[in-house]
Image (cartoon, rainbow, N blue to C red; front, side, top):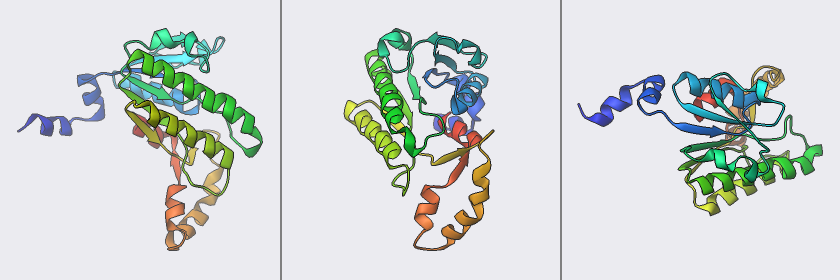
Length: 211
């Protein structure tokens, strides 16, 4: 049996133990960040988690805590050295159209700082959680995320974009009420593609995909 076939048969946990990564995560105390770091640590990866001053106690167990401002690369950039993967998760919580200025300041600002730090540190893989698009709502939010994607492409860094529309989880269950509508739109040919692109995913699905 060839070595690639052997690798393909390994579980994610055993594969991680065989090839542990050094992962730098921003947005580490957030809805997705905490769950992702916990999963990465369980799988044997080494994780450095960027947190704001005063939020150290919110970081998951098992990671190295880096205190800094996610919008200021100079406050954390030196700590990225040695990481082979950078996961950019910072974003405005509960986005809505009234938060346009916050999208520019926080989502865009932190992504540019993260990208700069990753490039300077020679990170091999940049992972960015964007948003599904096109979509009929949240146009400014989508525009900022799409602009970040373009900046990442232009940087030349090896990157992966994940584009969820809405991630279900603790405190975020109300969209389940929309499932009958999603089912209906999914069987109508003219709306099927949009229903799939703007579908709902769980936090577990997101963290598994990221890991």
